[in-house]
Length: 367
Image (cartoon, rainbow, N blue to C red):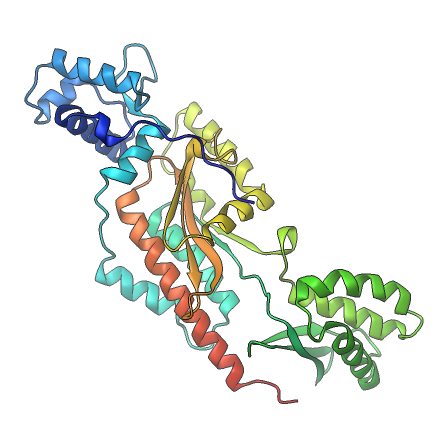
């Protein structure tokens, strides 16, 4: 479920040219340095007004809820509402550099790498490029199952093959217990084909779990165990059953040494442990056609830590959304640089999913 956003603040139309210029300079300075900005700093930085006139404008912006003061005598910082106004109306988004494009393409399109490995790589890659924590929500398998097969590989391993109606073939290696016979493998395959064919994994999982209890007398113990292991190996589904990949948490610490900042980071780490809420937040991105930005108090999940999320859906060539990828960091993220990075990585990841599907289909287990 998508966490609702807070009500929006004032619009740019409410600011005259002077207020807009001062506001933009304050936000840009904050994003660059993380420090409060005072009137003298602005007057020395090219604003052709007296410090007193600048202070009056800053006071007006504060009353509008766009600026705040961390201390009575300090300069001003943008509030979450101020950052939202800046991102929506004043931010000049850059482009992905050629070197970064090549890096993303190279690391996500390594020959022989599974799509799951590409998802892990994408999360790590974004973490390194953006300086925050990279997060990826894995796809939901919502196609109906066409066929299931367990193939003995020798020794203590078997290959679990699942073919979906949309043509996707998923393979998982499984460890076998001692004494598992070919007949046990065939019996487990027959059972799952009966129960899964024509159903999505999400629909079938609860039904199979209930049927297992009733059917244990019909299956020998080893075959029943294979059925359970097979479902666990495929995963998918919603909520806590889905994978959330988080890479680069250490980047969130940066060079902060103030106790207040470290406490905020600690709260962010706590937030990242709330897997179900974060998946819900990123699932909201699945409804969007491009990058979405969540700033601090706009979501309950990150309201205390004051963190931002920049995320985008990755999708197939037919514009079917598979999952979401993004960056989590402090509200002082480099939005102009990270937004195109997230967007481009999502596009390459979508292309990689298409390539992965083609690779699987070319190696499909014919039945």
